[in-house]
Amino acid sequence: MDCHDQRNTYSTDHGIRKPRSGRGRIKASSVVIQRNPCSSFRIGTWNIRTALKPGKIEEIKDQMKHTYIDIFGICETRWGGNGDYITEDFRVIHSGNDKSGRNGVAIIVQGKWKNNIINTYHLNDRILVVKIHAQPTNIYIIQVYFPTTNSQDVEIEEMYEQIEVLMKLTDDKANVIIMGDFNASVGKQDSSSNCLGKFGLGKQNERGARLVQFCEQLELTISNTFFQVPKRRRYTWKAPIDIRRSQIDFILVKQKYRNQVRSSHSYPGCDIDRNHNLVLAKCNIIFKKSAKRPIKKWCLDKLKSSTTVDIFKKVLENKEAKSWEELKSVIKETSDRVLGKNTLQPRKPWMSQDILELIKERNFWRNKDYDKYKHLRNKIIQKCRQAKEKWMEEYSEDIEMMMKRNNNGVYAKVKKLQYTPKTRSNIVKNKAGKILFDNDEVANRWKEYLEDLYIGEDINNKQEEYIKNEQNLNPAMKGPEITKDEFNRAIRDLSDKKSTGLDDIPSEILKNLDEKNKESPI
Image (cartoon, rainbow, N blue to C red; front, side, top):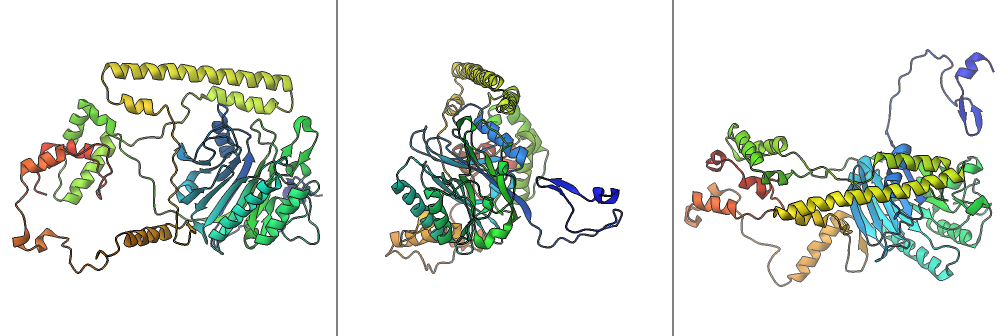
């Protein structure tokens, strides 16, 4: 190979390759016109065995940042209940039992994709569905965790029936991705199967044959059996003492969307102290910006300080407003400047960077030096316990000080100690019992329900014309003018911590307006 050829080659897992296309001359200029640009969409699944151990979620988030995973499905969280919350730049959606300690699945969405979630469906502790806004069609992510080989065949068949029902609820054009731990070995492709690739691992067992049959029935492909990679990038589970390696975790996609997957295989280099490997698929999917953006709230607790209130009023007094729209803009600008917006607090504030570094070091020595790995593992458990106890002592001291000062914020501070899982799912069923995922269909179903509820009352075709402007109102229909005392009393009697109106200005801010703007004729 001459010098010129060496400069135009690159190294891969399969050896040295030449690029398939390109110019021979290095100095040649190039102009690239991008048509139908696609986002590099990364989706992965991992059986983590448990998320109850201290630092486990922080470790997962760190792996997502390191591997640039957009959507991450995890099995065996062992969390109790259903929940949906945001931590830093991640949205965590989980589905579990009434009590923690068994099964559980979750989907973690990172970055811009977390704002594109349309709906979620927490079916049970083994199946979770998330609908995501994308182009040219929406994406349905189904995270599953199948029973182990020790379970009865009835449980397996029940799982497949539930997934089949979910598939029927999606649109024919919908991009459906099913991923998770299937606890089945599918082996390599034979001549009779189009859903299985040539690059599986091991021999097909009975559960694997059932999975292949299910994929053929619903026209799905097992993506991580279609890419030729070394065997170390195929296995997803390792038996204790490394006596056997199997491929039992998969990412399934519809056959019509098979070309969207650029690569799909396991990543044994990623380690979170578990005997399962991460399975990651890189896809070409167009990101569609969501019209709805999360609204950050102002730090209204700062208004409890008289100094902050005085500054707030003084800034407002120095600004002029000739209309309600201008006044509303002035109030919002002043609130941004003086109060600022709330920031998300970490769910485990006691977790330090030192502990995270120890976790990385422990994972490094796991397969190299067992004694050192074991020492670091025990050290991490001890450090987590000490950090949590220290944080709890300081937090309790703050609560005691607030109680001595009769501070009303003590109740909210105590409430933060207990996490109550809450979901954001708004799915409903139509009259036929079919589950509705689309927001427009859900809204129409509520409209239909209310119309049936108030049947007999004329609520649909009112002939009255609603007056939007007081100037168009008949003088005879006008009531007495609102006095200044009535206006001030109405502002003063507003309840705190309530939803805002169309102007998006909370009552706490309206109560603290300066006298100049209160008396303004606008």
